Amino acid sequence: MNKSLPEWVEKYKNPGFESKKIGIEYYMYKRTSRWDKENKKAVKVTEEYIDVVTPNGIKLRKQRLDESKVAQNHIGHTLSTL
Image 1 (tube, one colour):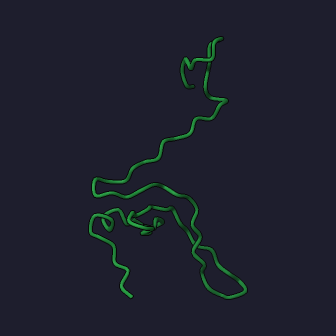
Image 2: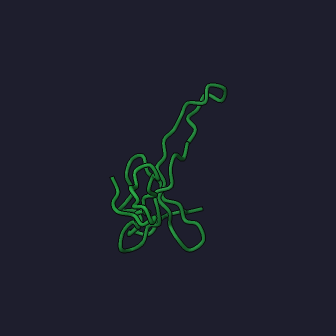
């Protein structure tokens, strides 16, 4: 079975990353491999979800703010991030 990716997804293909089609969208993941001593072969390990790949590029996910890095004033409004 041929699982070729569209050209606009292939152009983001780099070592250490993998694109997967799920439903109608393509998703980018960071991946690596590790050696399985018992089976004596490399095993693919998906480390991290990056985001959706579109014809316009990769939608970078919004970084979640660490609460310890957010300074708030006395009424709870965010003043700035450190």
